[in-house]
Length: 81
Image (cartoon, rainbow, N blue to C red; front, side, top):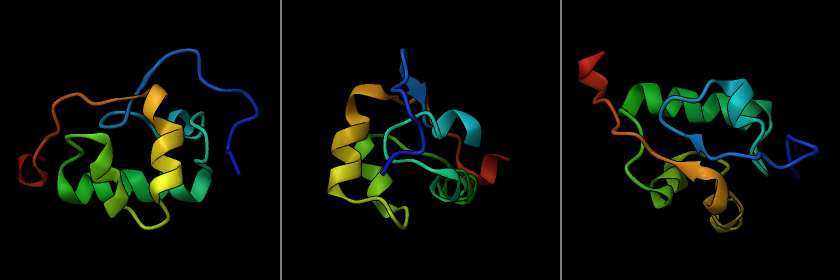
């Protein structure tokens, strides 16, 4: 189910969060947090919550659970790194 026992008390920027911060989100454990960070590094981040469905292991239910806790700074292009 969730990688965290308690829900976060603030929103988490999915374009800059470290794996440990991502694990605070409902439905995100260590393996999925690593996949998010890897995807972000290879593809330049996310513009909106729906873009997370490109990460293996994230589906409609996870997107729904993440919605209240996710925010997005402007993503860097993968080529900008």
